[in-house]
Image 1 (cartoon, rainbow, N blue to C red):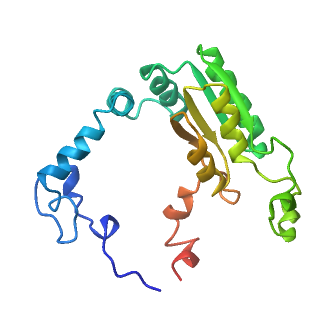
Image 2 (cartoon, rainbow, N blue to C red):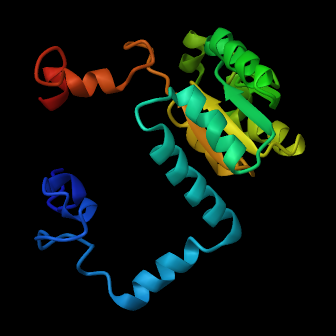
Length: 208
């Protein structure tokens, strides 16, 4: 069913990024009253939110186009005072996770990782349909990954290649602030944006 509701992706003006100019009728920005704006601003004054907001803005400003995502992640961690970093990785990206851990440790961080297959629970044990075992009997276990890192009292968690949906459960159960370093895409070499850049050529099928 076609969704007739208009939102930010239907704009094209991005007037909000400039803070002045003409807004489309459906834009939420001019509809934001002063009371609502103050409530939003107060959320950013929460101690943890403020620390993260300022750190993110500083990393963006200071290293814009100068640092890789790996480097920016470490700078962000330093700015929020996170010394113990948790890694929630896909088993298929073990090598990448090991390399990231090596880099983090070399730069003075304590690292603890939790692999997606930890617990070795079979899919059928939690009611996953049997046909799903064609990709392996052992289920991905993002809730246990989160619990392991929670118990380790990590101060920042980094997701490396968790499956669609499994990452959602990890974010839900993680007690520490979480950022994503690698997004899994089995077809496009973990670069899902490639499908967006080629949607008018190789991936026309996505618009049919």
